Image 1 (cartoon, helix red, strand yellow):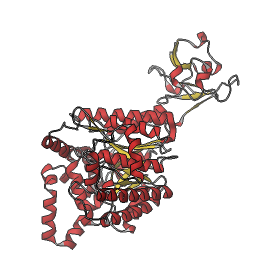
Image 2 (cartoon, one colour):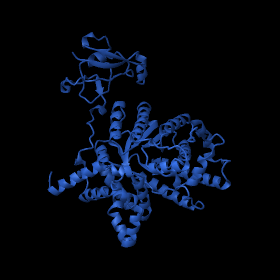
Image 3 (cartoon, one colour):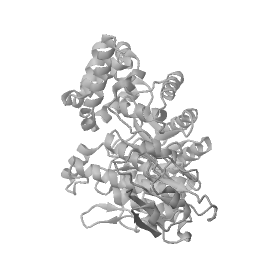
Length: 533
């Protein structure tokens, strides 16, 4: 006796658009006892090999219109031999179902690397896993520069830390890095390592205008990086961090509300209220000088957004610290309102280690829907935990960080599932990059893509990791045909090293968790030294 679990619609009209809300679950023990449409009779007892879990069938007798398809899910008892079953001609399995299981534990993927890349990665990961070295890296680099001199210091950096995590400085160097990644099935996501923190404000507009030119060049570089190019953008490279904090502190005009726990919250209605001010009007609570800088900043961001859209480049706006994120989100929404009518060209970033991340994501999705905008999301766990907790303690407000790692993982998966469900139902108006080094999150996302029928090459869902890290995940995904991006900073040694030091200090927990990649590199190095095949 064979057992089938079939989802069949309660009425033919419910099938249009595959609306699962109207479906009933029916259990049948034998094919002969079924009183079902011909297509389902053809399938009972005729199972495809796992892991295929979804199919669309059309009645072989032509009794139903072509647009009324019967869809169903099945479970295959383990006692049955999958090889004994084949599809009837009236049924077609989605290609997703035959995907082999992903595994990130096979060190063979590192055979794609050169010998020097294996040795360098092993050495740097070993050093990065020592917390004392990471905490004091800025001092150590400064001392090394004085002892070695600039030229020798830069030579050493380019062949070690800089060479591991940075694309290069010149156009040929950057292009060579992008070409090497392309040969491995990896796409570039260029990032200019320019940002500004509170108290670092520059006098006048010159610094921000120079950064605008750099960002426009980044767009041009990204545009030649292959299909569906992306780049990262720090708002504070074009807009003062001090202004972001001033705007965040607003409690009048109904722009932001203050919660009972003294935290700041944003709402879709308030997003709609502020947008006109970000598109040409002055904000009455800012000084004349602040308003002038705000409008100059909005114009810079507008030019970058328009240029990126014209070049076919998606701009992923980075989140920063909580004391400026509300302002950054509203400015990002203003860019979306300008560019995202037909496709998600401007994306926002959500840090799931924050307690409010899911609420903020939900509110911004509602705002985008009310504005009839496409919406792109870069989903991360977050990198500023230590500083955020220290500031919360010093300023006397609640800790914005999730209580532990398990809570952060639960938050990430909750947001991930919400977005994947949206994409599975709504298609290309929502896009997502799963920017994570966590293998469980990546595997969960890949599994859900199969379940939801999301095409892995459509671009609606892609994956992202940092250049020089998590290559066992990136290369495996790339070889399996998924869209994978590497976040690639570029620039001179002097301009990029401070950025790398900050990222290393902010991501100490990630750096200490690279033991698996280090072990895989060690295994690959041993294989090469022993001459094994």
